[in-house]
Length: 265
Image (cartoon, rainbow, N blue to C red):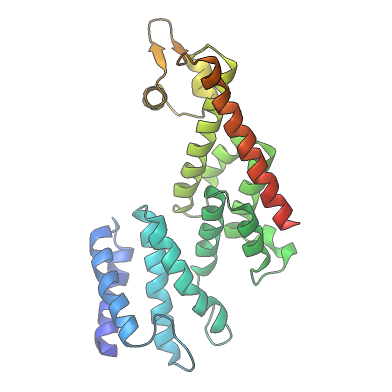
């Protein structure tokens, strides 16, 4: 693919990316063509000297791809784009002007690591960022996942929930929602082990749902019995052996986190 054709497709991609509403399908089609062009021009994973303008275009394409991946809820695709961007963020950082999307994307990667319970990787990645530790609080894209990690470790789930509305960019909400899904299932397992039943309004509050409809869908997925006339949720009856399963899961989860902490230290 010729450079002029690559830049023409890139301009089309930018227009589609900035369109209101965002054209996901067209962006996906253009990104597929542009990645082939980047491979053919040696710009997907560049080495050595390249024209600065060409490097900027390649970086912009990959950054749009990373954001597009989150908007399409494709985490493996985001991982690939983020990995390809590392060459631009590290090897060419001395010759390229900083990108306005770099830290929003770095922050998204940190939250992704949290959703995958990769605590050691989270801290290793955080420590490798090219900003001083005492400047993290001033960077809204990095301080947001740092706060999330702290609140998760404290069990301050209400703060995690409220952080969704304070996300510095819209794409962060996707990963916060994923975190809340994990949190809800952990809370639900504890409720099942501790109670035979709960009032609907209490379950709604404990599980951080916005409305009863969301709670009823979740209850159905968990196999709970819902009595709307009494506004009561009854948890599925478990035998003695089955009742131990949630506890064992919680113990295993705690041990896994302890091992992660040992790797950090």
